[in-house]
Length: 254
Image 1 (cartoon, rainbow, N blue to C red):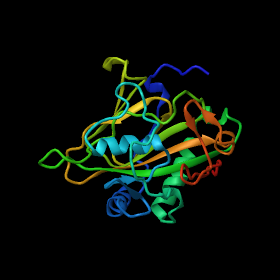
Image 2: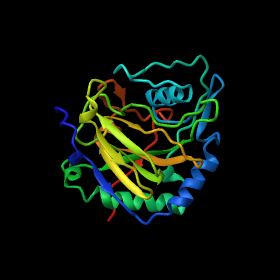
Image 3: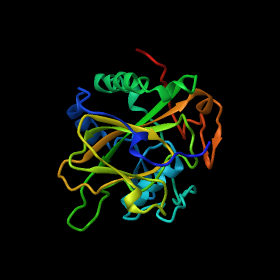
Image 4: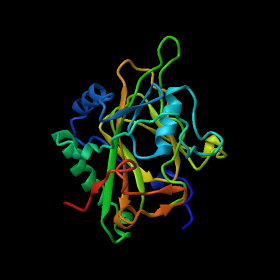
């Protein structure tokens, strides 16, 4: 199916969800470098994520460069030594604020008529992003560089995030590196906000300049037929390999 033109109508946004975003923020900051959530790549502490592509762009951001600016997403490991890493999913943590996020997102997600067109259950995987301002020597990683989660459009694979501590920042979306800036969609981010859209658009966050880190809980929502089949979508292999992905059922609950 052909990817739709990028417009604001493709985004679903819920403000003021009532979740304990301050607790979520502090938890993610405190545990960012726990071995469950990060691993070592040649001396670079890198968040444990679900794909080689996502890990490569995070690593690139920490080293001061962006992957994908030329439209080519690095699907190969650039690291000489990579430890076996664990995957994780905040929706499995057992803490009440993350459970509340699961239920709030579930209710919001299934209020979207487009979601029901798939005619099947979904799975969800999540992770947290913690970004700090650069230090006096311009070191650190202060934004999420341009990337996307799916190489080709799928009408029922979604990506989004919950904003725990994001003010003031924006998230920008574009169809690809050739898209002129006037065609980008730029969203102002607010604390305690949920946003999601199709997974195949590139997105990036603006540089973070505040003392307390920027924290989001990102997620992908995938139809059961895609997740459970190990279906190859474009250049990305959805797989049950625990080193690649760890999702939980996300059926309509309310």
